[in-house]
Image (cartoon, rainbow, N blue to C red; front, side, top):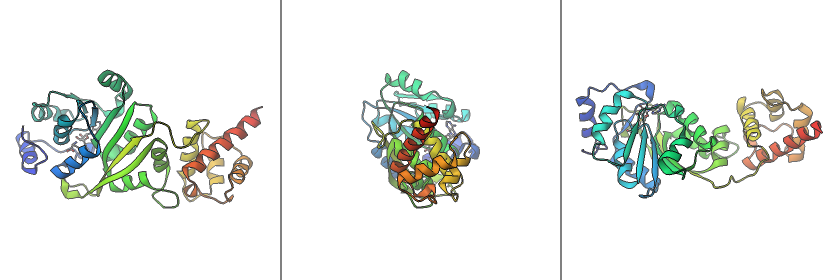
Length: 293
Ligand code: SAM
């Protein structure tokens, strides 16, 4: 089969199948061989690797992945794409096409079945309408994962890398940076896709840490504190945490914890580093324990 990264080949396949592009599934097909090369290179694939591709679309990237990885499991929601993928990937014996919604797939089980429980590599040109839930469930749900090399909206890639103080910094930045080293490897303009998306895109590589860079007594509490801190960004932390659903700290407890942390009482969530959030969680957990005993 001809390489789909070449625009004329993608257009021919779309015509042959009279394929109706589904906006609701975030379908923007990549038609730039340089970008495809760059993505597979950034993923550092070897024949030992098992890759999970989310949303293979017509199979443009899958063709590249199949050449470099040992095996590829490609999960596509749109049933209409399955017969197309069967044709475009007919020569790729190491690819399995799975017609499922990625948000409903048990990825830990998939890694167990396809890779004997060893860490998988995720490579994808993600559907932008569900980027955050996909990334968060891969990071939080203890899927054995080595890395994620993904195309996302440029602004989302910047949020993943952002540090304290700026408007890009938030719950996504902190969650990503707790679990992984995030690095933007390429910026990709709209003319590299059919149809062109209305936003710029970027390829980001997230390499999962063996051990998070900070330690906390309770990971769930850390993420509840982080989420509450950014729910209403303009609020002072003391009010966000004291008012938050699911957390039961008094205003006084939060105030004392901030004092012990050495930050002003008027501080906002956007000013705290990951390290400070970890320490704040520790202080709040200790205050809750003291209250109980
Ligand atoms: N990988 C192809 C490429 O680069 O040309 C297509 C990328 S396109 C941005 C996103 C793909 O994800 C589409 O094929 C779309 O149908 C698929 N998709 C959307 N939602 C999905 C979901 N929940 N589970 C699995 N695939 C999904």
